[in-house]
Image: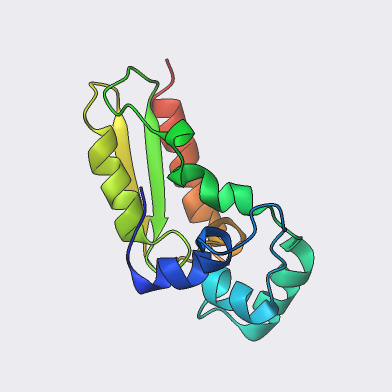
Length: 145
């Protein structure tokens, strides 16, 4: 799925732009990282996260989901699925995760969605990350086969 939400397009444009060379890696700037991954978080955290996590990335990662190879059969049997969203996530907005949740609910398999307030795409690295981790762990334990 793709979103036409401005935050999604702005955050992902380097990867999904039809004019971008798919064989040329993306070198994300600090400014782009701040917007896409850590918007609204303290500047020191943003810079430290950028320096720790950002490496050149293949454009194939961003373009892959738009190809026929990535077509999803939402009715196909599958194991339980939990989709997590952050209200402040620009790169994968909560609305996109919610759309995926509704599409994946076409099977009888367990499908759950949880949106966390004030969480960015760096949710698991932000202060309070244990709330997200504890929720996921409890969900896994509840839904083990």
